[in-house]
Image (tube, rainbow, N blue to C red; front, side, top):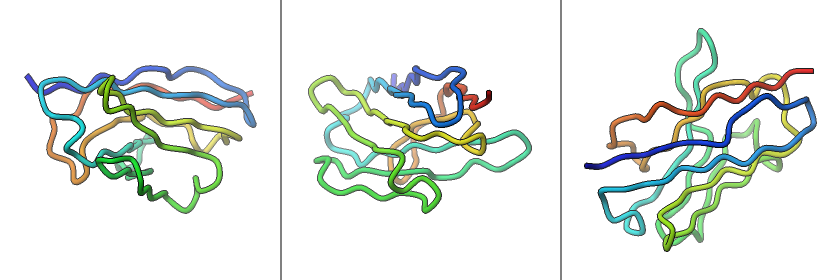
Length: 115
């Protein structure tokens, strides 16, 4: 079945770095644009970044521009999110999905930025 499995979250100090991964299965990953979303406690889920199917074009939420980088490996069916210079306000559960979203949400991976 169609499935997305996120991993790589954890507790990181402000200013640190983290790389999230999302392994896709059950569909032709290389044919779809993909995205990362996040949901902070008490807030709605928001789109953080997206990438075209070929990996050429990307888009970012203003607050993460210059700090986060989305990428993909269409051979490994894996989506990545490199997070640098992280801030406490980046604390959230991070999810991947297609863009636009159509896949059932996975469990996500918790990212906590705290000293």
